Figure 1 (cartoon, rainbow, N blue to C red):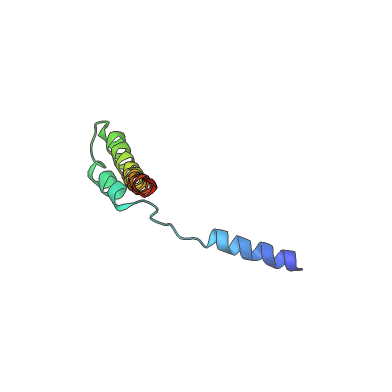
Figure 2 (figure 1 turned 120 degrees about the vertical axis):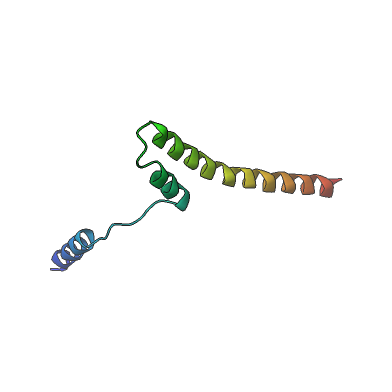
Length: 77
């Protein structure tokens, strides 16, 4: 009996879902500006936006790591 209730609950949750806007604001802006473009700039713009968003955390992590390394070296001396 509990399995039937669980199955019914799962089906309600699956079929009652709403569409979600699962994209960042930068990607959405690129898609909206290149929507009516007949050339192949759509994919390039979206790829550039993804690469930009991907590199910022790595740069920040690298700076923090370098500062920690520098502080540790100064503390050892």
